[in-house]
Image (cartoon, rainbow, N blue to C red; front, side, top):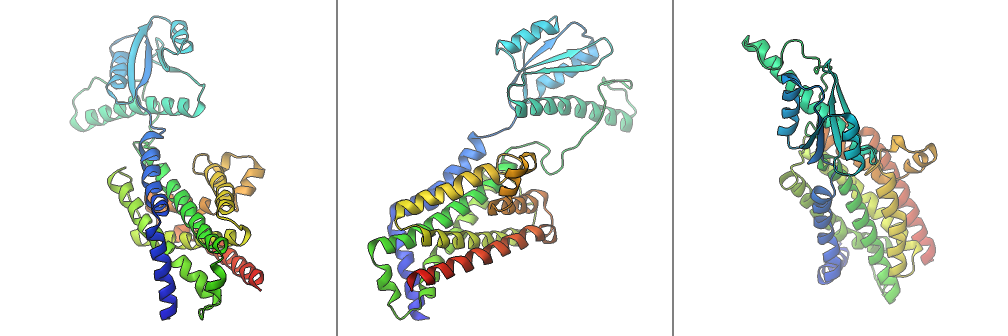
Length: 368
């Protein structure tokens, strides 16, 4: 046991002395969290809006004022016809136009060059106008005093509520995804590079002829990265909660437990990559090709898996971060219990067992 602990301490000192490794381990999570939390965002802000004034009355004017008072829209101009509003959108002088007819029906003309943002602008506009209309009617109902909304307002077509993320902040979606990407990249990449570095320098043979069994050598090299990954996980959770304002609605114990399972899976994948690569550069490139692109494109981080072609959905089914991201969104944002993520946990456990078994078997065969 003392020899095993000595190997762990040796690897930990090697990591702490390598400034480049420490920069990757702790610099990357901070930069990625800040970028995805603040710079890369799908939040709706400062949408340039044109109002068509062909059929304006006090009621429609109030709807326009509610839109202007929100933080999402800026009323830039007023025009007299929808055609002029459309010309402003085509010339990139406006993003959206608000049109009312004589029956108080509301129409939105939106720049659809980016369909996702166009849909969000439409949803935000409806939410801003209709929710305020609903609030004023409720106030009239409880107080018995008439309000400016009026009892026969036709704007109140329906009322929809957004569960778990009523403000529609993109950080709620990105933070669990960033956790899945960072933990996978850091654990798998750094573990594979660490083992390949020993092979490249010719010191792996020295380690393997020591009294410690080869399996213990590999575990000893993985333990420091497991501890560092846990530290990184805590740092990410603290940044998510206190910097980005993302709630931790579920059990913190469950969040950490599922994350540790995911870290073990990433370490197993790193060990498998180290069996294939013969140089650190090869391990780095292999990790990037095998992990980075699939994690970003097929894990549900940016695009819903359900919207992908059937073939890509089958490929996404074997991407481990997909299940971790789903579990974190349920635990962190929705606040569900552990029983609601048992499917994701079972898949992650199965993947961990399979990857670790293949990695250890290939490692022993190669050494023999």
